[in-house]
Image (cartoon, rainbow, N blue to C red; front, side, top):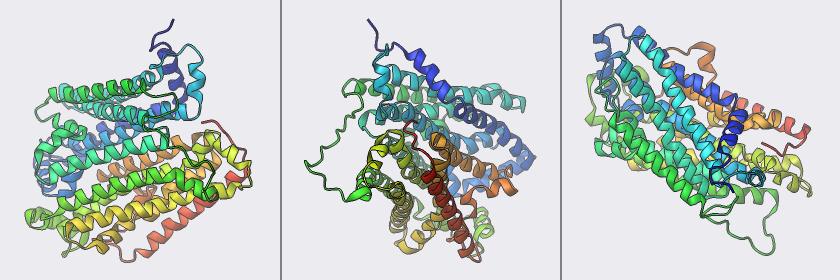
Length: 527
């Protein structure tokens, strides 16, 4: 006689064993970041007048408003919370989504969940174990950030609220992933759905802060993280909203899990025709990728349209001396406010497109881990052709997504679709570099390919964040491919061809090396 939660403790130990490297690295980096930013803020803005001046400049910068919202208090703590609140929620949310899908849907997709179910494991134990580990990891990095902030002279209560609010951002998206994992039988689709929901919720918060529609911020976890207002009034009760949101979604996920078959999803896979009609390996790959790609395209199209709407009227509304000085510094005397806005926002969104490209680049490895590649390669399909059939979508999908994103933004902003789309497509070589890293790892270190690839993308985000406070310079900063993309709208690059060509060569080199390693190693049908 067993209960639905029987075996949860055993599965928690199994998850901790499998993620014994990834979890400590993530927790350590996110726990150390707040104290580093607080220290850098103290060094860069030595007195209150300097901090007030920075806050005034940021308040007139629509790109900063879109990414981080308004500054509630120009103290060291207030600026630290403003800098990291949305960023840590974004990074923690992304990692939480990946971990939840890895330990729920992927386990069913590869058949390991069925193997576990033959033992003494309750029906809800796998989902409960995954949620417990991810929620605890988020809580741990939030709490570990507090002592260093207090040691730096910041108030203990506000530091604790800040740590808990960043942790709560991860809780919300772990619960979102718990639901998407019940909806579809494909881990890639479940992962893509959760990331797309996260992107739309982030866009909602950005629209609330740039479009003057403040009430929209109360509809998204990214808004709640900001509205806790650590170091600026400490609204503890807002944490309750995030807790209720996460608990409600987790409850829905447990309910949905009782309404589907193991290894199946609530959205049933449609049966194929009695006789196969797919035109070879590329036709099969197109069938596997098209649903995820369509979902991403719709999401990024909606995101671009929201950005275009948010940018309307910015040139007149925020024509202040502070921002004219900032625009002139970045793009020259003729630079427009809206161009600076799009440049900053596209820089961040291109990294989300890189996440979508990673999903496509890692699909071949997922097919291998699930054992389906071995079956396909027993037919007259060569290994290189099979790998290329998936890789082509890692190359083409960012072209489509960046085009949709730029076209939607340009169309809803001022109708200048070609100019905005061209600037967005400049990020394509950098996205290809990220996909190339995943291809290289799939060939060289297949068991670690997914974890290390996503970690690399997360580190690029962290490096870009540290660079704002001059904590990352020189070789460390140059490691991020996104840093080398010329700001086309601002005309800051005298020759954009050289950096774009250089990034493309790096991407081709990584991909070629990955394919060469893949041809020479044995298949490894386990994650």
